[in-house]
Image (cartoon, rainbow, N blue to C red; front, side, top):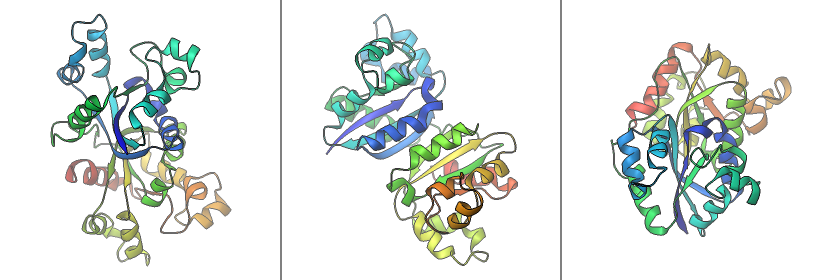
Length: 283
């Protein structure tokens, strides 16, 4: 299996659900994922091979203008497979030659073209190392204020439902200000869920599920975000959700009270605390 680096650029952040769904449908495994903001110096270093070219300054300015998502994707022939999925560099060319490609669908021009992909094995190795093998270099994009936490649980992540769930959150008017893939230990899972220990009989199974594979944590923001996100998530029990609120996330993607697709913050005063656990303490 081959690895490649994928980036969702600042212009496509509102389309991340659709892009992630396309990645899953095309047979990639997402091995690592994190959101961050590059400084201009970071962007210049990352694109150093293009220094001196006419588009270099515009490209580095753009890539440091907002949040991006970096991913390590794994598949047979991942480098060319991803480059085929994103399409030609120039959005207008992509719209003519590969109209179903991600750049054709979500890009704007030759620089603001939605996605980046490594162009060779050497580039993939260097670029993956740049984003994922320099601990502490990049701060999280989390704001850690006026926020809620949403976790896409391992069963939903492993069933490739994450793109659809994220798209539902964005389509409902929420901002995803930070996102990162975690592999929780049992100790971390129990610590995070401790408030439920004496409340829910499913506590042990909930902790087991949270460390049963990769989970995708997101800082979510909106007005009155905690109750609003709980409303979108739906009742804790997916069976009840399907009866009472069939359009909610848990109704559509949940299995049972433990594998209920997502965890979302329950109490308004806990939104920042839960986001800090993932985006500060676990960093």
